[in-house]
Length: 495
Image 1 (cartoon, rainbow, N blue to C red):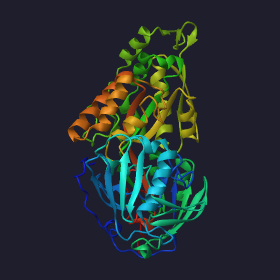
Image 2: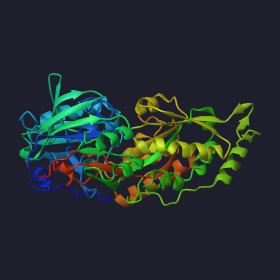
Image 3: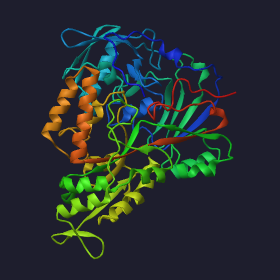
Image 4: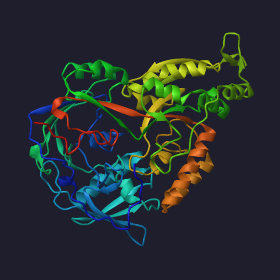
């Protein structure tokens, strides 16, 4: 994935037409199955903004291209001003799905609402304040200085929407006809989006686990099955349609809850990090590569690898921390057994596959592990009621390291699931926010990863590869962008 900072002024691009790869013919309907679905239609709540863009319902002012570059979308340009604010010009002739035009006033109203309500929208540069200058121009003031506003506006928390009473109306290539929370979304082409006649109606179904997703695809119930478990691919050979695999910029990781008494000691966390073989996890998933840090190796701010695998060194750290190996193979200290629970969630099938590998690796150094699977990972992670939590996260969704490093690791961050706190780290992230030079940002991001590695509030495990099932109707579909752009304007039906 390319990594570049944008020039002082971003030129307009004819996005809506250019994203249509080829002419296709409108079909009655296709059915897409995924293990995740937006929990609601309000981008100001939780991770809904990401899901709505992934589903083809919402769009941001800027987006990330197939080549990993931040490019204009609903915006035409963004220009920094001498006073630290930015001027954003909107692209012409863009419309909400009810036919009303995208105007600066409407954009400002929605994004100001999101910024006040959603902590994720404040992670990279603090609160953003949007003001309409005229119908096509916005001024954006940032709580903390930034040189990368286009990248921030491409983050998942910033889809554009209009409030009409209690109804939220979006600009994406597909419009919501019916929404069943936790079940499905019925969508039709947004007739005010370029080339609407080339797009099918879509039923987007949430299927809770990967095995059920594969069975539904094998039975011909789905035209697309997104993120199939690798162990189901052999079963699908010879079925109608095909499967494709593609690398993603997600990282599989394991949070370590520093509020758990045993895990409050960094030596125990470091031991766990050193005890798990990333190669064994790749073998279990039958895809991907060992992680080197917080970011996929394709990013220039990725950490140099490999991460250490040293079970003997891990055991020595536990000895040093006072955990003695008992005759039953489990360590104890002051009469307390070293027992931990490892959570995973079925929406990311590989994480469940990892659980027995992690359990065996930790058993080898004297840690007794039980496993749990939850259907509500965000709730469990936010509650802090876990020991170890296998997790999947796109760590650079807008091509920049700042969002992940701030949102998940700063002391008071909204998603600091591990509960880790380090004043020096917080100061470094403050430097990263203010840094405008790309080389400086790369250096600061790599230093941040070194600090995380030393304290081990998380173990970065695998950069994965995902698998997608496609029926003959969607044979020309090419997945890219991880799961941030699953349903795109170029989704058409082969004839």
